Image (cartoon, rainbow, N blue to C red):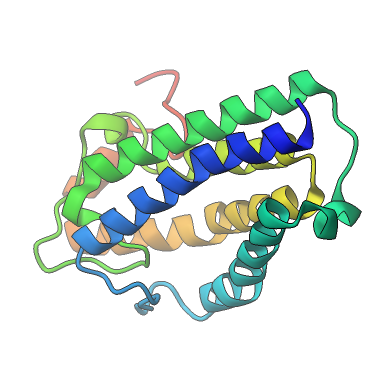
Length: 198
């Protein structure tokens, strides 16, 4: 796979994915700007503003004027780039399944709606946070497909940060809201992957 085909494949997956995310953010009634609850804190403002926005700018440069972004490229054999395309597509499909399952319960920030429900079906049946593995697969896929460190490394670090720091806060928020129901749900599910034993 050459660079031109990689950009076409990337855009073919990325553009519908972004459109889907915008749809579910609007469906949840959230504004496009982040809303920070007491659970989220200001650290995520830094991640969004100082990591996500520059990364999106670099991604646009890579897609439109690739020679400008070539300084961050590295050689990678074609099979690895196709593997990256598969991971990007599979992760995007998992995130879509999660968003479709959540529906109006989805929020881009750590905040609960007044009528929020504890979703326990679909990808949530055996995993409490299936969206984050989906994003991790996507970001590793971005790195391999693009063969560009600036396309892949910042989002991988961002997802790992969210998984390490945000997940415990999210679980504390859900425990406060749903109490024993969440405890029972937590006891029978895995955090990011299904439990091997019940």
